[in-house]
Image (cartoon, rainbow, N blue to C red; front, side, top):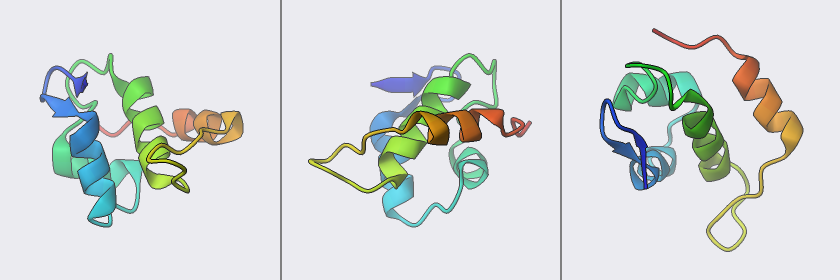
Length: 78
């Protein structure tokens, strides 16, 4: 699924970046530009990054609401 239409970043692109050692959401934005266009995808992009960077269970990591809230509270990089 495409997460960011502005920069055509998919869930697979995000998972690939995490698998390559992407340490933070800010680093993900620097490498893919996800969420840096119109910003409409920020919540989905952060959720996808959290799922990909968490402990994997069957290929998908369950999100904890506290994790999601903490990442969403971070200021967006422009």
